[in-house]
Length: 106
Image (cartoon, rainbow, N blue to C red):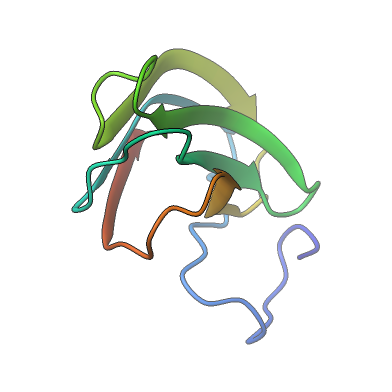
C-alpha cells in the first residue's frame, strides 16, 4: 500500500506510522499447535509500503524459543506514513493450520 493512503484491499494493517517514524522491536509469536519433526513457521513483520520484512522469527522443533513460540529481540526503523502487516508462512514440512497471537512494540 502506498504511504499515507487508504485501501480496503488489506485487512488488519497497522498504520499509518506516526509522523516521526517508529522503531519496531520485540517480536513474539505464539501458536496453539506444537511443532514436531521438520515442520516450521516463519513469522514476519512486513513494511507493507515497501514489501520488506523488518523483523522475523521462526518456530520449529529444535532451534526456536519453544515448539510453540519464537522471539526476535532486535529492532528496525519504519518510515512515517508506512503501514505494517504480519505474515505467517509455512516454511518447511507440512505443519498444521493453527491459531496465532503475534505482538511487537513500535
